[in-house]
Length: 315
Ligand code: SD4
Image (cartoon, rainbow, N blue to C red; front, side, top):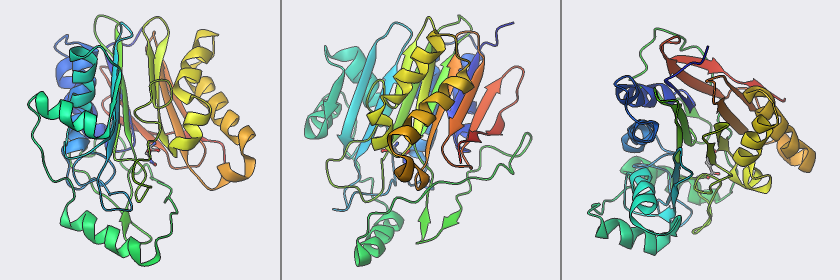
């Protein structure tokens, strides 16, 4: 039998995000509203340095956000390299609903956001600024792999996010990608990030690219990704996962095939970096696959009470 509603999202911070999405889904609300509300949680979280407010900046000290959203009708909206607005996902949704376009970038995206009533904020917190200044001393661009352990499990408190200290004084939690099916059986997805810490100014990752960081096809399913965006863009990852599901692959098999495609394109390169895909099909079956161990994702439905699952990995 089908599992709906259901919401899934990347990493352990996905559990708090799923709870916010569930508030909407459990009342019969639309998946689109649920995924937006869900990813707004990590966007606003000052302890999370890879999404929204307090995201790590680029190498010029500027916090630039990438986000996109897609609904059951194939409507989509996206912002890339957006500065000064915490809820990049809501700006992406406004691009989708209020403009004839799909994607706005940089100053244009900011200008549009301000015209829609979003308030200009400083997203660089003293903590992120300190980390950036520390990074500047060596100025080596070496993305830190996000490895989580899955010690949380069912029943632990998902509303408190506890970042772990990583080498080089970096808290590293990646992009949140969220996909959901509502009570009506309709799918939507959202993806939002501050991108790779200390990237070149103007660098855009996979997260705001429809088909790379996120894809939704209401007939088939939805997929999203996290990790080093360049690798995901190369294979148009999320679209690939959805198309593989169309051919009959299970969500996990489709994610695995996409990961293997990345390995095939760059066997050496792929050893030192993380990419994870997460997918759900129209029936509510879901799965994930990643390059390196330590990619967790969170699931919430009536059957599963906000569980954190350790995704299978290639290496
Ligand atoms: C990006 N996929 O900008 C995003 C960020 C991420 O590990 O997930 N970083 O490439």
